[in-house]
Image 1 (cartoon, helix red, strand yellow):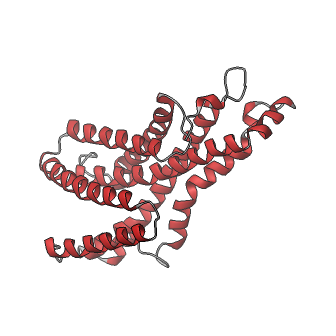
Image 2 (tube, one colour):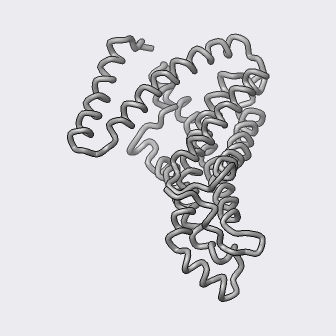
Image 3 (cartoon, rainbow, N blue to C red):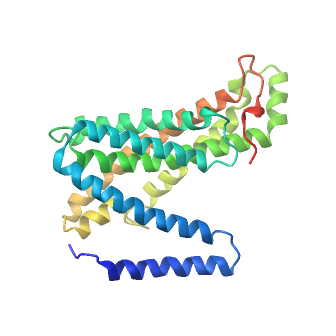
Amino acid sequence: MIPVGPLELGISAFLVLLTGICAHLLRLGISRNIAIAAIRTVAQLLLIGLVLKALFASTNALFIGLLSLLMLAIAGREVLARQHRRLKGWWGYGIGTTSMFLSSFTVTILALQVIIAPDPWYTPQYAIPLLGMLLGNTMTGVSLGLDRLTEGAWERREVIEARLILGEDWNEAIGDIRRQSIRSGIMPIINSMAAAGVVSLPGMMTGQILAGASPVHAVNYQILIMFLISAGTLLGTMGAVWMGSRRLFDHRERLRLDRLQRP
């Protein structure tokens, strides 16, 4: 594997700097976001590199579990931060976090114990990267799904209330919006699967090839990962959107948009 040193990293950082300058000149209002994201990328990856180095050397189940929960907590915060109209209180954080926990952790444990089956099954070289990929993609799906749900409910509140008046229950009144929200959440992974190998080479496959692995071996792993990600994203998005839509109605099935924060 060809090593990447400070010079190579500096050249890539210069490209990000140019991107920020262009955004500033075009008055896009995202120059600060680009800078913060770049700084966070460097700091977070350097930190996780040190953590994983120590973790791989010990294979401690307790530390692996704590790191997994920390990853989940941060993913839940990112889901909440990316929504234009979020649910108030702990509901906005709890719905996304719960749905990601039930979907990503379930699929990851299934893959580790049944499909990949390392010994022990929680071997960090397999468990942490796999969970990270599942959480990252499920986070995107849940965030998009909940954002589309709350925006749709706000924009079509008169339609929902009219359907309630006509005798429909809450599930029927918001059913169309919920289906559209789920489609929005799973569309990125569907696009990735449809374009894999033709338009783009997925990240895990590319990394394995650069590290010297056989292309066929890398392809098999990538197919497995994409199928797992698609399952986790679909389950997480469906769960989050359903829980979110139920939260928008009270026990008397009245639409409660006062449970949403104003942007």
